[in-house]
Image 1 (cartoon, one colour):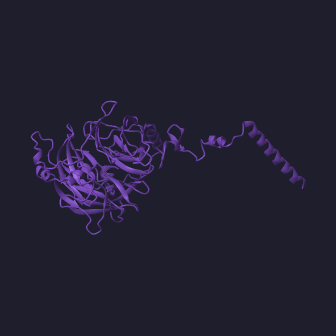
Image 2 (tube, helix red, strand yellow):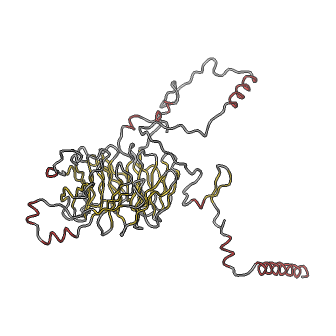
Image 3 (cartoon, helix red, strand yellow):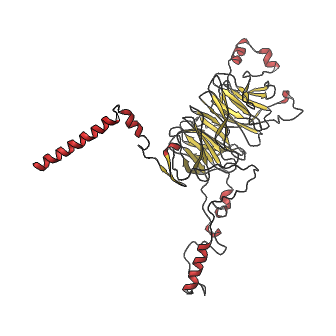
Length: 473
């Protein structure tokens, strides 16, 4: 949409207002925007990854490499319940690296600068830091037990030591610089692990009786939001872990806000920061609403009413007040944005909007009759102009590296490429249900070609005999 047609007061709003669109290609389980925000990746139940173009809502690419449900997406890295992670090349859809584990993968996170280094949380197993710079991956195990202080260590009983040994890591993320890893355990502990040495340098108890389900950072990396099973969403201020003179004894993780529904006692499926980090949004358990809180005062500013189904994973657009969420029942991807009324007065300098009809005074030469030859000549001149409809001018962006993928046009709700048939250059249609499956009908019959021909002749003779009997009657 032309930006000049949009009311500038509408653009000043930083959070979406209502449900504005839907995307569908299979049953989606997780979604993720890319860094520029022009593509949205969707992981499906069958292991296929579908990349949507946000401007056209078309399918830009489909990636196939998993056999089971996609658990997490980091746009270049995907993890699945088939016990493996795949690093993708989006230029041609190739699989650069495939890493297999000994257990299903909860979530996998790429290093912010080194795309050949990622950390993965495994089901009932210790997390792994994986280096895939070579064809043979190098796996390093990360600890899940918290690091207790000296005072707590002296008073620690054997029961506490046994509990620490049974702790499992549920979620892992890198810090903004990638020199540390923050993990959350099933006992409510937050651990800060040094990436180079894989040693825990600090631990803190975030919730007493709860599992840390999800951790997310803002774009700046200074703030973190956590979702736990105790029905409380916490925003946490992170210290500067990249300082050279960092003293691990002085590290403190302070909780800034606690967001919860005190009346209905709702649980939260997924949480996310806004593009600026000023808002926190969350999808609700056994509910179809999305809550939006403002971090400045810690107040609830908006409840987005979604479709009549529970919403799971949500993701905020990196630059716009635009939220995408996937439904748990149907697997559709729902888009929440701002409804922008157009300002038609921006179409022409002398165009003015009026609330009621006014008398129009025509110009002196507005309805003059011109010779037919002159009108015909103007029409021919306009027809001679060559209109370029193929060249796409690159949009101005703050990112130096530009990347674009071809979009499959004229395809509505396509489930797979096998449903599309090319009938000409640039023209495609849907395949009919029985097209291309004649071999199935032939395979079901064990008769030879001669027997089938004899059968057709006998049927034809029988039809001719019946017709002769009717004529005699």
